[in-house]
Image 1 (cartoon, one colour):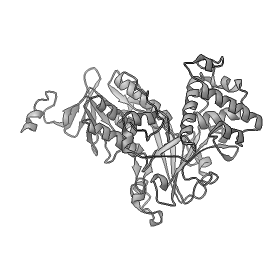
Image 2 (cartoon, one colour):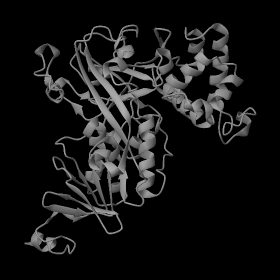
Image 3 (tube, helix red, strand yellow):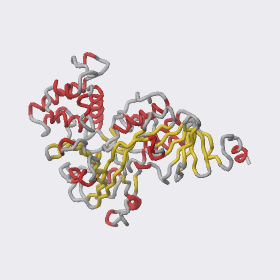
Image 4 (cartoon, one colour):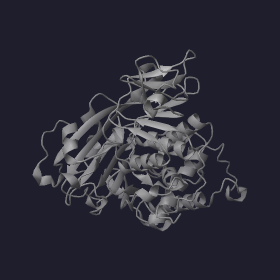
Length: 462
């Protein structure tokens, strides 16, 4: 009877419609992808009433981790062969990405204490493709001097450059050595150390994680900060700058969802949004699902939940998930690696990303390695786009290929109260996607997320 009484208090509810869940919220989040779950977690911690919906019956949206049966079902590949191992041993990410050990996503995990729900392990190796060979990215200035990536004199110049970047502090002019990185371009900075174009390419793509060469003609400061994050992360674990959650990335959105639920958030899986409701000013005021409605001050979601006129297409990404019965060759028999193929090395504009993970991260049965090749499409033939990456893998037992269209919002959302995330990029790391997440948070809340937390260790005692 009390419930019936509560329903009658909503004077905005049209006749014949029922309230969806509790009816009124501060925010309605559509989708349970990582970005949406981080936003719902952060908003709920701030005391907002949050309703989060997803058309799927699992968390993660396009970034879910699937077991063997669901993976084969998704790609209409029939029944998985018994030789691959037990279904429960597999947690295969549809959008596999590594986490920078001391980057902004780690800071978010620490900031929200979501790390208490997850276990991480480091990735064993970081490699770059050059002149037809897979070469290890140097982990220290001393290792750089032994690297076959460069000739003897170039190694010394590279070491001097790394020392400069390591000591550089934006707030301490004495560390600038007369270089104004807010004006000097990245190309000019490289040239000031006498570094060759091949070295520019290797540093920018394999260490600064730039996706193309546009940054070379922009002020160097942002790229230098990216390089500092890479080197700092690398120094924490010694083998590579990346970490990865045991049981796959699906644990990340689930962790932030748990955070939201603890703070009173409401979740509805297997529930699609039929329509976003607007007021006379064109501002989103709620959603309709079946014969139920909920109202909110604003809505947040991934591009798939919004009308086509609110998003623009930004391209297409091809991702190949491959099962191997061996580690990727020429990587020192390491189970977990990232290899970046700079686009110019294979006559492309966009980089190709190759990564592998295996049973040590609890994503596959023992003896099965999950390798993923991804890149931004430049032509029409998806298979052709990933040939240079697939060629590095050796024998492939099973391959699944998918092409995803990527989108970004047409506006910042302030005028229509529709705050839309961008699709995940083609890279095998989260750095660009975290920038979009921070932008989304600022658009929604009007303020920057406080990132002043030490990301030294995801096992930190907090």
